[in-house]
Length: 125
Image (cartoon, rainbow, N blue to C red):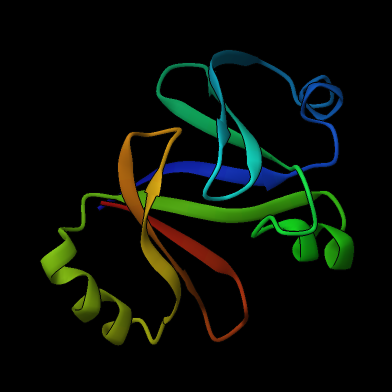
C-alpha cells in the first residue's frame, strides 16, 4: 500500500493551482458521478495532487467546501485489493462512507472512508 495522491477541495481550481508551487497538469475531467471538475497534477517525480471543484450543491464535496472551506480533503492510497479492503478498514477502525464508485479521473473504482478523527481516506482499487 502506498499514497497515490492528496486531494484538495477548492472553489476555483485554476486560482487554487496558482497558490501551490510546482504543479504540472496531467489531466482534467468532469466527473458526472461526483458532480465535480477534477484536475490531477504531478509535483516533481511521482507525487500527485488532485484539485476537486464541486459544480453544484449535489456534489459529494459541496457540503465539505461550505463547512470547512478550501483545503485538504483526503489522502488516497493504492495497492489494496478490493477483496482485502474490508479487513484494512476494520484493522484501522475506518468507517466506509461511499463506494465502490467509478472515478472518471483514474478510470478505476474508489472507496471513501473516514477515520475516527473524521479525516477522509480514499482507496483506489
